[in-house]
Length: 393
Image 1 (spheres, helix red, strand yellow):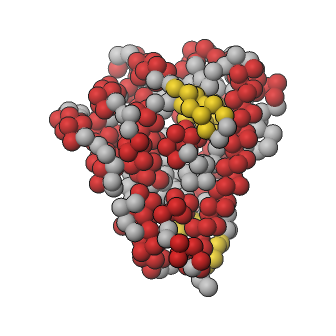
Image 2: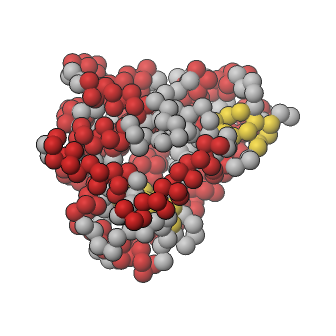
């Protein structure tokens, strides 16, 4: 029996021909049995990207009864069992975090993978996620920071003792719980929506409660789940993260999307070009996207800077990541204020937000840690959380 090695090289955000087979099988456009066997035939070098492996559990429900006893389909079952075990642990941690935040008077909304599992998939083993992401209101961040200190949550860097106005330019703090579960506490929308207060208000206005797995959770509306799926998915990643396409298809088929609001938010964020490309792919993969929505997005002219930023986000980032390309472009395109003022404030923004330093004195140590870690990531062909892991196929 051959072995394949899970790797991180060959990343991106747009699916390859081989990955289209997995997407077609996961969305039901292709016969899952035939698509999987065709996929296996295309693995010539025994290397499979971690992003592809994340799609395996989605295929399980699509397989025929005959395939379940066929050893050629064993990787799908193995990934499903791994996802069940990991998802159960994350679900317990999410309950702990939600209850702890509620105890200190903080309302939290589950976002990203957890929200997709609770609303669209309704089963955590179908949609793998590796950490917990929650959204809280900006005025509650200091309560969260106090809870983190009192509860012994760890972090990879030292956060300030109080939430100042400059922290507005960040969008999340990352913590590690006692059981080593990673949790990201967000107080702002990501990427192009970071400075959009109107969209943030719309996000909170569309929050709803849903019952899932015996608990009640606050989750975003389907519109905001789709917006976040596209905005998070359309950026180059060393893990070829094409799972966003399947997520987008499933959300669009679930209904309840306010397409007018989506177009308005994409227009305000100056991301119409990217959203048009993403929604076209979602529609081609079986999603339900109104033609009028695509026409409206296409009719909005994108500036040269917007097109450059779109290319920069989707291009291979190399050693410095997006520190020299997409991140500065995002700042100058969307940060509030006039260009002269933004230019003057840019060094402070770059130091505190992009590089994660609090002052010039901490810059050398921060640079050594950041770029040392980056060198280790790029020098290894194996993803950090899948180091030297081989699986029979």
